[in-house]
Length: 117
Image (cartoon, rainbow, N blue to C red; front, side):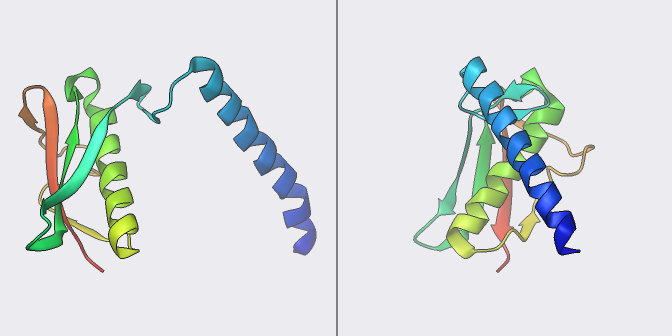
């Protein structure tokens, strides 16, 4: 069993380095979701009341609905991990659901969730 890890580790490292190199060549600092780099922001709705309740904004979501949903899920997960150490989220509308309706405001998708520690 230990032998399997010795063989797999160099392959994983090589794959990560290859992907990092591709990103550097493209010059894109944002992750790609469905091939599109989205700018996202996740912040508490009212940090004086409860930081667990947050909103995620995905800029220019119309470029890829699938990508916007993925970007929102990632931004929400990152927010909860950074603030609560957990990836459990109670979403008002779950962006991991491909059939989730998008709430758009000026072309930006907006989601709300609550970190569930």
